[in-house]
Image (cartoon, rainbow, N blue to C red; front, side, top):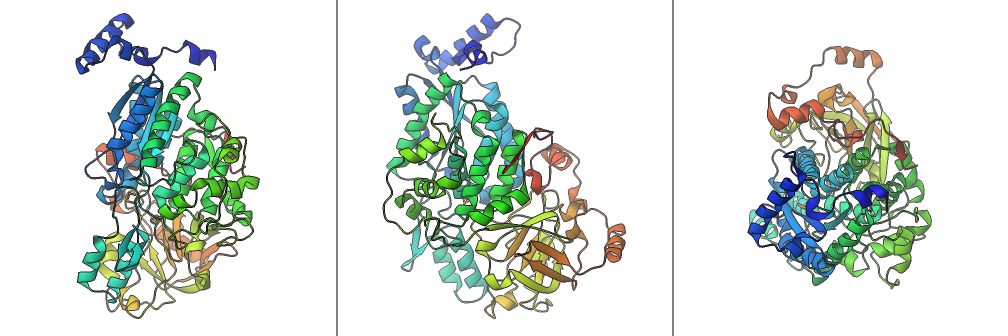
Length: 578
Ligand code: FES
């Protein structure tokens, strides 16, 4: 324990409001808080802040109230005072224009509250896609001892005896409906079956991926990533987090000590092994950026060479998150990857990752997590592309794509915006064949704005009706972690700031070559220079006031995590993976 930690005021004495008289500030604080019935004994205890992200708009967080009660119980069993407080809550389907646009706002809200309110440690309760990244970004910047608890995945559902889950099956059934293979009555029936309980999407989407990343990073107690939202075990995990937060408060173990370059490397390995969401790359870059750590994409791509996909979960495999929990959760994944992991990394439990792996329950036969010598998909689940259409880089989740399309050449069909896409994609006279390459631009961090999950460009209706299920699609936006297809994402710089996607035209020949990590358009440098001279930024990037102005003036590109430049720690002092 450092002298600084020992000498810092504790509990209610922390962060007193400034009136120029500290004793008066404490007296006034206690006078007000006593109106809520607290005793002097309670107010003399260590304080554990609990971030409450319950919202009537957020079904992924519907179990937050009982989870808070469990965390509080854990804090009180250890002799502390739990204090819950609210922050913004973001749900994917209730965040206009997109939850990504608001992630940084949530991280700022959380960071400032962690710093403004008196607490010796905190328990962050998040779950839906952007909430856990926002909370970890905040914890990294505030550097208050913190444990992440997730709400946990929802249960899988059933539709006409077929197992279904949000949201991979949401997209699959919608594709069937667009293709005319199921009718309006059935799609309405499906709508009521996809999300049968509270909790986050039940496949290896972004929420589940970030839960696994958090456990691999060491910011969550072991076993917490996959426990279903509605199980009693989820509550016991919450109770344990509350109790452990009290020990963290005493030890002063901070996020910056846990989230090191080596810990991020562990998280990136796990991302590859679970066939996780591409969104995690953006979020990990943002969290690491808060600590002055740069995400090295070519090095990440190289990690894929010896990190195969081991987890057989949708959207790349067949199982659901409740199956992963029954198979042992993160324990079999970490056990299989142990030879590749930095096992000396400290975790919030107070033990190293290696010690936690050794202490995990014994292995048993199961089909969900494969051993290293019998993977689902040999190395390189996510590839990093360069080329005259990729600029500073673009990514593709090859494990979720069609093998035959990983090397493909075809004519571009360019859509200038989300509105243009919506207007024309289903036009009967759209000049496309299954070989066409669909390109969506001006949908990046500034262009949309908010880099929406629109990269899963729908197959044009006339092709869908012919049975076409996959095509090469390219954009500067993101894709839901629950989606699948031969889809190139995060083209950087985005079109709205003049990246190469701004220059491609309908009819240009586009070549995707994943084995050689290339994405190119067959257009001469002279012609590209001519097009560049004629280009101007879209009007949508202009903002006069409010959060949109802050966002437009300061948001960074995908390779820097789409964070605000003034929130990141620059210059970088380390790279990951190393
Ligand atoms: Fe919240 Fe999928 S919508 S996790």
